[in-house]
Length: 199
Image (cartoon, rainbow, N blue to C red; front, side, top):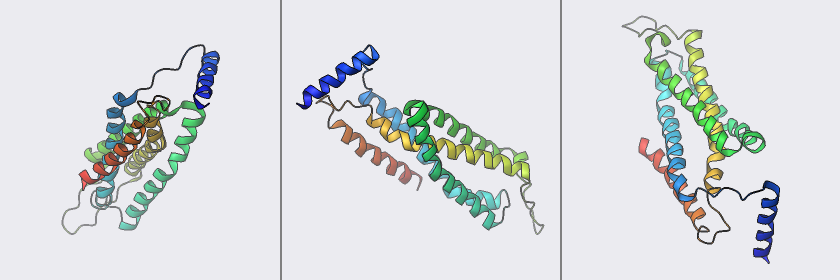
């Protein structure tokens, strides 16, 4: 009975779309999905651990403002997956949401790196007993734009990548029924492994 309903659905798909749907990517796509997730986790864990030190010693922000900046970034990064999921489900689809979010995320990380490298995007270093000059509005704007782009990119990646990976397996194929569970196991392994790598 269940087999007949699956055949009926696939026949309806053929009539609606005029052709069979594209074959699923399967295990071939997994290295790309895992690599994207590992890079995202390493970037987040890596700069979260060092950001408070960077904000206080390089940008000379007071500890409370530095902590608020990091907390605001974390909160924004936690809320943007709602936006990313809405965009993926309503407009763009998972693949294009992940693609554009990865590009936005990469731009944010690159801008953050540039702001840390270029001396003009940081206040001058403190010497001796003099009062440290706090980062000006333009320097902080570059930092905040970089953090916002990172949060937006993360919001497009996080809600989509797990489901997109599971979509690569055809559940109606008896040879692939256990591969979905293997994918989830490996996915969690890579998340924790990448977090462990930094520590």
